[in-house]
Length: 231
Image 1 (cartoon, rainbow, N blue to C red):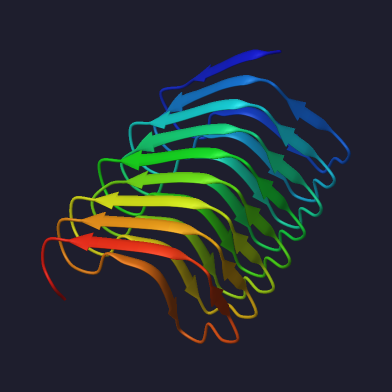
Image 2: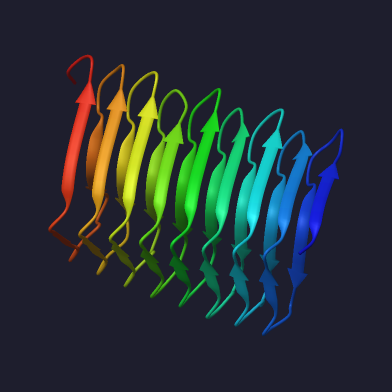
C-alpha cells in the first residue's frame, strides 16, 4: 500500500485526488493531510464515476475549518466507499464523508468515522444538494465539538436515500447535537439505526426532520438522547 502525507502552511492540501475519471480502485492506502483549512484525504472530483475507495486509513487535520476525510464533488455516480477508517479534526465544519452536489447511487458501507473540532458543525456523513439513491449502511460514526454536530445529515433535495443499520454517537459541549438530520429532503428511509446524542445544553436529538422533509420512513431505530438543560 501507499503511505501518503501532505503538509502545507495554507489550505487545500489533498492526499489523493481523482478528476473526471472512472473505474479506478483506491485501496489500502494510509493518507494524512495537514494544513490550515479545506484539506481532503481523498477527493473524487467532477464526473468521477464507478470508483472503489476501500480499506483506506485517512486522517485530515487543519488549524481552521472545513477538513474532509473522503469527498465526492459534482456529478459523481455509482462509487463505492467501503471499509475505510476516517479521522478529521480542526475548528469547525469538519466532515468524515461528504457527497457534494448531484452525487448519486453511492454505496457507503462499513466505514468507521470520527469527526471532531474545537468549534461547531462537525459531521460524520453528509449528502448535499440533489444527491439521489445513495445508501449509508453499517457505518460507525462519532462526532464531537461545541454545537450543531450531526452524525448524518441530508440537505436540500437529498432524496430517495437509505440510511440504515448505522451506529451513531454525537457529542457536544453545547446545544443542538443531532444524530440524523434531514432538511428539505424527501422519500428517504431511516431504519434500524442506533443513535446516541449527548450535549451539555439543549436540543440533543436523535432524529430530526425539518423544512419540508416529507414522505420519510423512520422505523426500528434505537435512540437515546441526553442533555443538561431543556429547550
